[in-house]
Amino acid sequence: MIDARAEAGARPWWESAVIYQVYPRSFMDADGDGVGDLAGIRARLDHLVDLGVDAMWLSPIFPSPMADFGYDVADYCAVDPVFGDLAGFDALLAEAHWRGLRVLLDFVPNHTSDQHPWFIASRSSRDDSRRDWYIWRDPAPGGGPPNNWTSDMGGSAWAFDEATGQYYLHAFLREQPDLNWRNPAVREAMREVMRFWFDRGVDGFRIDVLWHCIKDEGLRDNPANPAFEAWMGEKHKVLQTHSANQPEIHELAHAMRRLADEYGDRLLVGEICLPLDQLMHYYGTAAAPGVHLPFNFQLFEAPWDAATLARIIREYEAALPPGGWPNWVLGSHDSPRLAGRIGEAQARVAAMLLLTLRGTPTLYQGDEIGIGRVEIPPDRIRDPQDLRQPGLGLGRDGARTPMAWSAGPQGGFTRAEPWLPLHADWRSRNVATQATEPGSLLSLYRRLLALRRQHPALATGTIALCEAAPDVLAYTRESEAGRLFVALNLSHAPRPMPMPAGMAAECLCSTHGAWPGDGAGQGALRSDEGVILRLEARP
Ligand code: GLC
Image 1 (tube, rainbow, N blue to C red):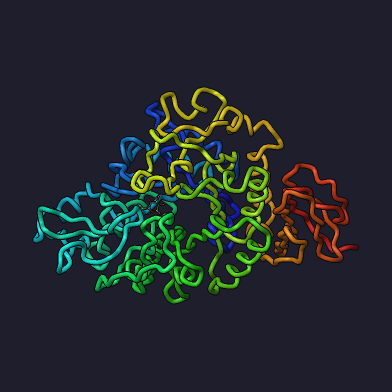
Image 2 (image 1 turned 30 degrees about the horizontal axis):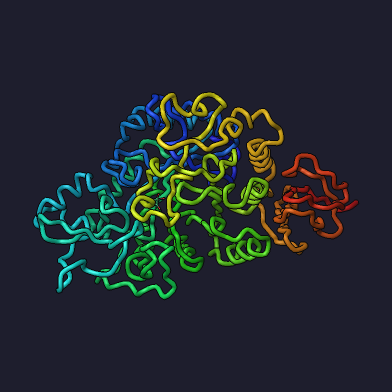
């Protein structure tokens, strides 16, 4: 029951697809313990079908002590009891496929949990056969950690193990020891993990912190970061010159790709936070392709103005390697909520931007109903990044609060106390309420996703930026089937409507509902308005 468009077309399915990130702890709680689960996701598949997305990526569902909420994996080939079990996963996968939805899992290759049997064996003795599965070193000559690398969660990236007298490396929490990907046995074990899930039928993986997996062989000190200021968090004290993004990573990404390609049509999305020129290397080359989609996070932090966005689009498109397919991401479980950052009116414009740019969009659960900034009371903070470096505003809990499905108790998310509080306005900001309102953000998302399915120009057409007034971002999308024009007013005041010369227009969608502009494309963009017009050559 997978969408016939992709099956019939020459293009791989994921080029025309829209990916939806599910954060399982916060999507839907079916068993009433306050934490979301697989049965809950299964019960809410209607939402994804009604929305019109093509694939869902599940943040980690594997057994985990939850020091980093599942990004500390204790068994790669099972399901944590809080989420369900393997049979429940198989049922979810089968039903998702039957509903036409692909399923991507989160592959966390850089590190395991310190409770993973591999690490328990590795730390048991210097002579254990798994010792070299992780990165162990003697203390520096004068004592202390072997080098100056810092953890992304603050402090040194090295933890001392009293029993065996050595340090182990952890790029994140000390409960997340880094695997040694220079060891062929690790590579083989992780290939088996990928096979395990591919054989079960998953459609691909989002690969966690891919650029971290290989470190400098000599573990040289990182250079100090001249721009460091305390508010940035300790990880920025040094540049990650030697601790990440080493040349050998591309061979590793290519090996993962070869494995995925053995299965035909599976997708690999890489989480890579690097400058554009470095990011592009993760596509690989024609001879040695890397991941299909190195995540493009530029919209996360971009100043929200038309000139900046135009520059980002232009530079990104120009930097893509031959055959490299673009992608765009607006939100995630790691970044502040979009609507909180740019406001509700511009969140509507952002939805239109995300779903009309060239490339595969990934949208994050809850952004479709416009969950904004959620204040987390100090006694409810759960994110280890926030707890370890308090007061710096590094907390990620605000992006991880539960979905609100209805105006019922706890927003219909759970029968119990939810593990994180819901957003304050959940009684009006929930799926059931917004589904009945034609002017809601959810209705706009549905309309935009439907247009993407109807118009090949949007799904896979070319893009060309157009001249426009200040504060307006405008571009055309074109395929053999037609030509569309997108104009986005990034300001809170009316702006002139730009139009490519000599064309007449029909409005397919406005963020404001009906569009008062005339058929010749005259008129103005209202404040915070985005429109999609269909263009025709004048008779
Ligand atoms: C990725 C995840 C983040 C996690 C980190 C360590 O960045 O998205 O949530 O803390 O990796 O696994």
